[in-house]
Length: 535
Image (tube, rainbow, N blue to C red):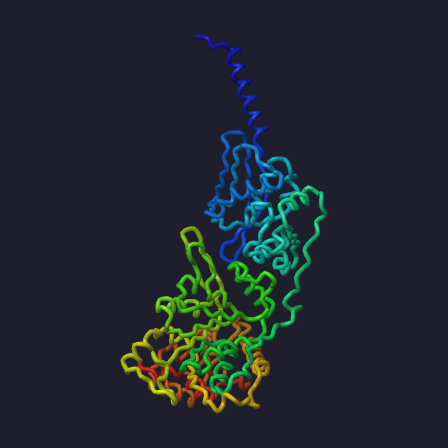
């Protein structure tokens, strides 16, 4: 049979017209946003395709539940700001497709991408910016987490449009233009040139801010001279501390005042600390930078994910929120042993790594650990004023909740006895204020920073075994003293190293270039748990 040439021409013409109509009906828009993976921000390209077909709104590119739920918020926000969507097929792709997309911070960019695809906003103008923000149903732009990390991503790259509530935090980063917005309507008018675009006022840099002084001062603590000295040594070398004493002896009071004798945060430390709290969503709304060292006191019923980090949606734990500060565990033996054992890796490495099927996140966790415990279940073992009612077996079982490996990682064990009543009602004219102690601690830290400059270490607590021979040399008298202590107390190799590190700190406080026998003797005295407790 012969095919009708006219029919063939008609079919080709119909197909050509159909394809032409489809191209005219389909518009592809591309804008930029940012997402978080751990502490790091990543650039995300938001591609929006709008075409004819069955009405549908789909988001692809590994979105989590929050991102998928953005469809309804975006529809309502556009409708309530005068940009009602026609019943079309909308497909949004979040690239790179292999990166998990979490949170509601992509909603502003997706809404702008839809308006670009509809021809309301010029694409070339919109692509100049990185847009992040959560949309409310009435079109307001709500604050998000991690704006400081996103600002660092945009540094020297693209201007950043974000919620007005995050603008002050993002302006901490230098060399990035930040524009804080209130509503979606405001963003549209600015991108269309109907309103002037004014950068947000930069927040003061850390060096420009006055360090905040804590109201808690060491001069308020009555007695406890040995405990104060131990905390001074711990602060000078960045060492971990165990406080042992009966209820009411002042363990918590001492721990609360430890941040007050630590050196002030350096600019980079302040920035890194703020990043963690920004990603975790714990940064106060009126604060763009954390300028004082964190002091975290989690409750003893905290989970392992809450302390170390992780969860269904990975978040920094308390060990990361205490980065560059102090983590205080009061009544440490009331914590689950599995939770406490999770502290080993952060204490050694200074980081926490959380691994998931599609990603691996790392959070910083360089902190000082201070734990407090009673000497026995009733709390009065060894107390001079009240008799202990616990049996030896109960005491051993109670103390055994603190595992040996964790105990070895506590450099200083200090007994905090009850303060005599006669000392409570009188001021000590010789009590030193925190500011005075902080000066000695800061001087010792400067000595360590100069000594370890080539090794990129900051404190004696960070010394690795390979550094010990170089920086912790002792004479024959000191070696003999240390060997006797290790043999008599049954110390582990890790505890041996801890004593040397503490002795190095004591020598630095005394401005001594070498470790003397007296420095070693004081360091050995700080292994109170090894001397008084049998496991």
